[in-house]
Image (cartoon, rainbow, N blue to C red; front, side, top):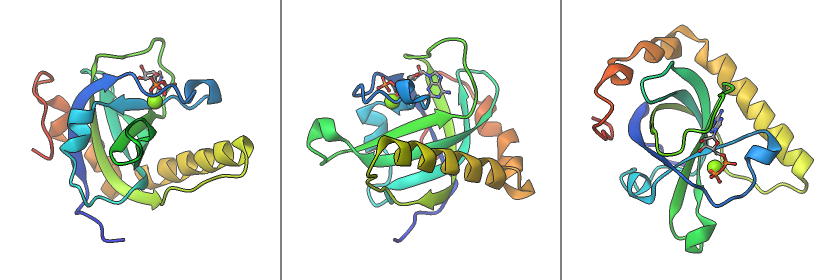
Length: 157
Ligand code: ADP
Ligand code: MG
């Protein structure tokens, strides 16, 4: 699929998702609002990506991010969900999530079982960790983007 130039920088509020039970699977995904998703390039490929993320003015962590079809809107709108590879003490609904999307891992897939889904996501996480340790990707962790004023919502500044 044709890809927009990456990295893609995005910042926005974390909202309630559709209660798919990601947290129960041990893989919580912080959802961006509809408004933020609509600001994404409309031709960006659906699928799983890796990059860096930070909540508020907190530390920058590795993440995996999915761009998929939003069942709540009969799959005509996209949803963007970020799993940060870090254990947080508390939920952070309402906070500002900043992400830099760096690379593509795979397209969206349907799985035969929950076990197959979970193991695919665990492989995505391992792939993200490996990719993000590469010097060219590590340097984006220090990007000035993560130190810009938090109040402002910036999309690909
Ligand atoms: P929802 O359907 O509301 O998105 P999830 O089960 O996907 O619910 O859980 C997502 C929420 O979990 C996030 O909005 C955030 O507040 C919290 N959370 C805690 N730890 C993480 C993490 N490591 N990555 C993403 N979200 C996390
Ligand atoms: Mg979620």
